[in-house]
Image (cartoon, rainbow, N blue to C red; front, top):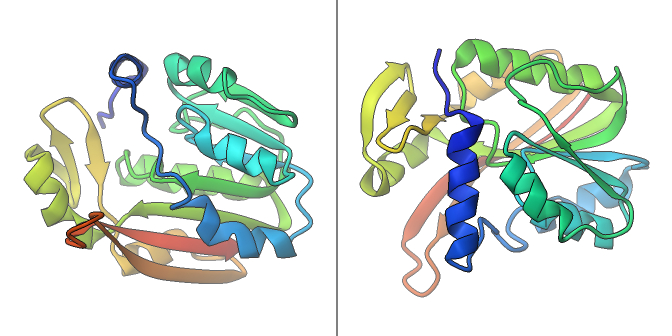
Length: 219
């Protein structure tokens, strides 16, 4: 099943840099998980799909040793310019086997990066996350909710339905929308599963802009 190649994301991040902007959600994602991380004994944290490293830098400034992984060499090149002490970066495709040993991380975070794949790759990715997380470790994530689909379609109309709730957009990006039952099925076997549907609004108008599932689960 298709998903956008790394060159697509290289071009996205190059264009954003040239425009003087970035895919940075500020404290939107990391702040929500800060209280949970503070209760865990985190010796090493992975930011899966780190983009240009904004959240990696935030986590590092909060005292966490962090590895950032992304598919795009351009994103990692930009991320390296923001690096602070206790950070490292890896270029790898999260839709394949992750290049880490079993139980390598105390915490894994992924913010709006894991919803690009078909069902088979998504299930394999969740299994890989579980493999590289230590027993008792925490997996923190945001993924696009099914409720987000009509909102996103207004900005980026899909050109093809590749599978159930998995679409191809005109620029070549693929997007998977997660229902709560589907997400709970993906997380079968985890010790604790905490999910929350989050509405993100447009500043100023407070109109709905995006819906995501916020997850905090323990192995």
